[in-house]
Image (tube, rainbow, N blue to C red):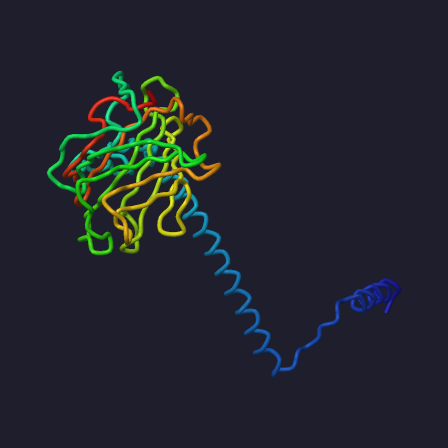
Length: 272
């Protein structure tokens, strides 16, 4: 072997020593490796399909949004959500019979002729006086009313006064009493300030406020309805020397007024 052949051999041996070491795996490990590789490949394929499908659906939704027509503004409803009140069978009635009464009758007592066919609505006489410091009115009727505890349902009997405390002929206060109470035999009493529209009322006992009364329905009473303001309860502008008033009585069934009477029949009664 010459020097050239020896040098070639050395080079080949040196290259062989640098070759990577090949490790042979045991046979029982190879199936496990192949299964893991197959699973990895399947998962990667499914992920790729999901990405592609998501892109397609997103593109479809975007295309749908572009092609869909713009929503129209909602038209305003032609009906009102709040129902309109039904008309009643008969208009509501108020004992205040006029806005301005120019007739003024001088005197504290008024004798009234027969104006109502029902005795306990027919006012025979009305008078005003001071009971100590308490303004008091008496309304005498042709007959006593039937007991409130025995009245048929829906039947109301009412008595009251209308006051003009400013002397201008315009009603300022409405006073009333009727049997419109939850418990049969009780009374509903009220005083309404017609300037403000506010009412002070009492339904059932104890009575005395906003105004004291004596009702002809009470035991031992005759056919006389009495109203009186207890000390400190009268309206601040009520002057016994100048107050104008008239009395009223009425009966109604189921909201329909049947009979009414006034005293005086027109105008106001005031101090001479």
